[in-house]
Length: 238
Image (tube, rainbow, N blue to C red; front, side):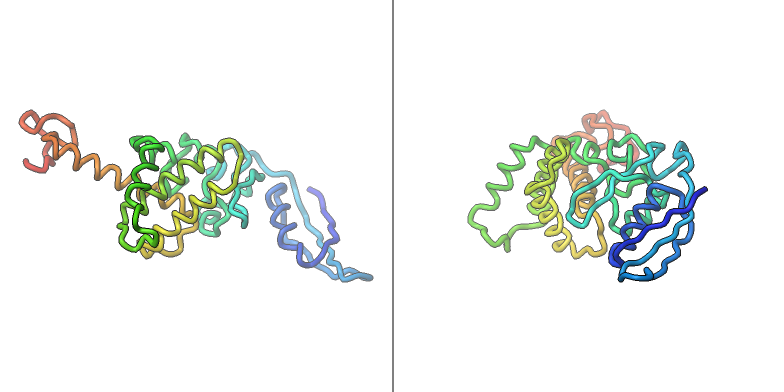
């Protein structure tokens, strides 16, 4: 155990203490005014962080992805704060292995991109569909929910491609703006991750579409067998 002393501008105190919490196991922060300047003195009792082998926040990696005020993500040391609390505070979108889909699914309220878009048409096809339906409707006043959902989803997929290359630019901003448009359409509030909401809603919509397509072609939406060969108890015609 050791003590850390920091002299800083009072406006930087919260940011510094948050950073220290991520690097060390810290106790209460003692704040005292500097004797000769307008600066502030911070005294923190700290110790090295314990092992994260059993941590449910970072899945043992020791780091997590934080959502910055600019809308980008940064890799920072794991604080050990429960995932739900971090998400509710708008500090993270996904954590450690949850970003890759191989962590405990209870860690994230949203489906991963791979789960959400597993059966989605190709990006070129979806861009063509949205462009076709937007023709002659510059204000979007007559466009339904399906349009805004599919538009947000395809922009999210494009942005994901940029994020793989650690590029956070116009595509990410456009995807977030499109996601917020659907939130407005659905009249949903208090969502800290608009793009996560899009993936959830798209996965649900896509599953319903696939079921409707199977029923229309005379196949059971559960087992996909022809109706006359299906023995599913919850077959729509059973």
